Length: 146
Image (cartoon, rainbow, N blue to C red; front, top):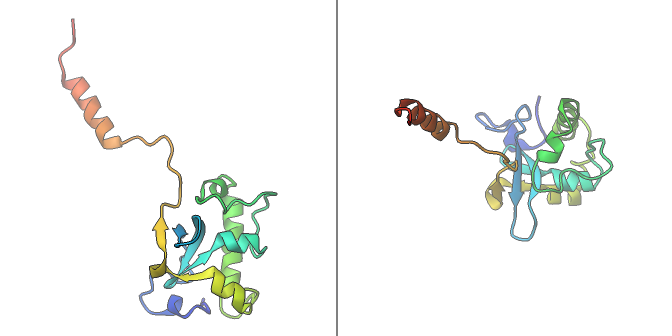
């Protein structure tokens, strides 16, 4: 598959059409937005959802939270649906609704080096496995208290 985004088709590209990793970005003027990387660019999922180019099946937007947690909670069927839709929007010769709308295309696609990338998920209940193992080892190694 080839994308109409030329940098995604370059040999050695980390983010071809077959690899659309999730991310969250912030530019100078905006709140964090969910995105996917494609070639040397990022595609703003928050904007695409607002414009109706992508849907999640929810009544309320999920990509405007600045993290992927609400979307991931929807489950694998919705994840696959989004992946198919993004591929259709980005593949050369398929759905031209993004490619043919120059105003939307300029707003939705940004150069990765021009934005700040953030963590894509809010991490809750984090446990450091290494320190936990160390603590358990110390407990087991210490003599019993009397």
